[in-house]
Amino acid sequence: MNKNFYSLGLMSGTSIDGIDASIIRSDGEQFLEIIDDVYLKYDPKLRDKLKRTIDSCFSKSQLTKLFIDIKAVEKEMTIFHAKACKLIIKKNKKINVDLIGFHGQTILHKPKEGYSIQIGNSHLLSKMTNKIVVSNFRENDILHGGNGAPLVPLYHKLLSSKIKLNFPLAFINIGGISNITYIENKKKLISFDTGPGNYLIDQWIKRKSKMNFDNKGLIAQSGNLKKNILKKFLNDPYYNKKPPKSLDVKDFDLIDLNTLSLKDGCRTLSMLTVESICKSVDKLKKVPKNILFSGGGRKNKFIIGEIKNKINTPVYLIDEFNFDGDFIESQAFAYLAIRSFLKKVITLPETTGVKKPCTGGSIYKIKL
Image 1 (cartoon, rainbow, N blue to C red):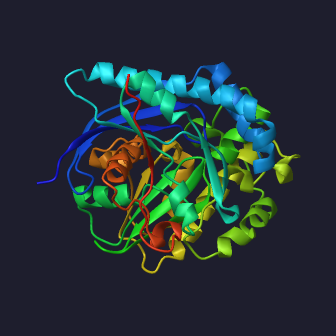
Image 2: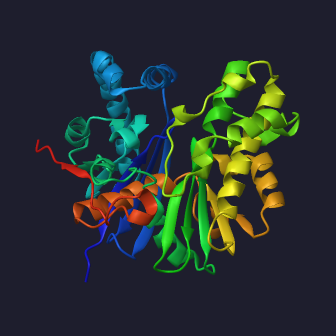
């Protein structure tokens, strides 16, 4: 009988709004019990520092020049992650957490050039929590020819066995970047980034207003679509690349929207997210019988409504099946921490383009 571990997963995504923390109990295979989820909002000053760090990094040479500044913000960010760990651990006192899955904060993702950089001090986190920390999930995959992303498909596959909808089935996460896991049957799946998710929309809203995001898609709803700009976005060579494939948030920009109003720019960017997802679904081998949405973008009623209008297949929020769509990725990193600790495969040729099924993750344990 396989041992079940209590694992705490941490996720800080491209929105840089805060930390999702989840505790699950699993054997790294088919058993899954979700214990708890919490969200800890970033201090505004830390969020600004992280954003400046990400915005200033476009190459490894810049990382070297900014080394001292990056190390300072990394330490501050890690302390905040430790705070999130202590919060959820204190809330679940009767549980002894065995592992922490620490994704860190992506500041540069360039798999074609052989690297993806996530900051986060695993030694410090292990010391502050006195727990085994598993991190650095992408490196081994990239070293073996993969994109290092998406990393959540094996967890999606596990969820598909719990939700029990008919195959083929698709999970779509709308985060900063949107990605899809297409599960054709119990043994066959593919995954890739579909295109921009919330990131460009959020950047636009912050640039043109005092808001941080388009709440429920109401701003997009009231704007006009600029078809020529949308068409230019969709002519990007990325959309014609065959999967597996992945994106960095810096692969698209807002330069063509400079003359637009807040509302028109928001609608155009929101339709970019919609069309990117719909085009990806259209290119799948078989039309999914069901599509489940997770991530912050699932709360954007304009985006989900437009997708429902364009895709002739049942569309659900994963919440309708008693899984909290805000915490799928933090739960996934708890699950991947267990698999990494047990030296099990965490990425596949069909999900990242890696040459063969690949293990990953680095293990840190500081004894006090």
